[in-house]
Length: 126
Image 1 (spheres, rainbow, N blue to C red):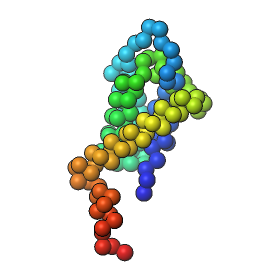
Image 2: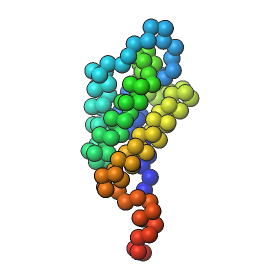
Image 3: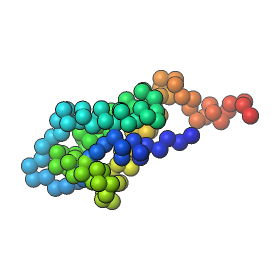
Image 4: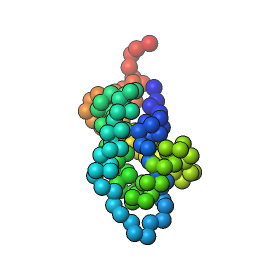
């Protein structure tokens, strides 16, 4: 079953527009990201396990921290709250989802919590 992370990002990250020009760029604070991490975890836990949510939400906050400044983050938040994402914002969130789900899959496999696809194909079930 393929995990669709988009509801997680929409529900959990009441955020704003990406790539807004910021003349006085400010870094996102840990306090600001902590609020969204908590929201992300709360919403994620409605449809996934704690470990998966910690990985997905942590990865998402890492992406926001690395790719956005305060004005861009605020803009994304506003767009998400209104459910009116720009194509750029949608692309950023989709890319974040793909990256973070891949990271989750990789970490879960490393921990031995998920069978690698090759093992599933070789399984004598069925």
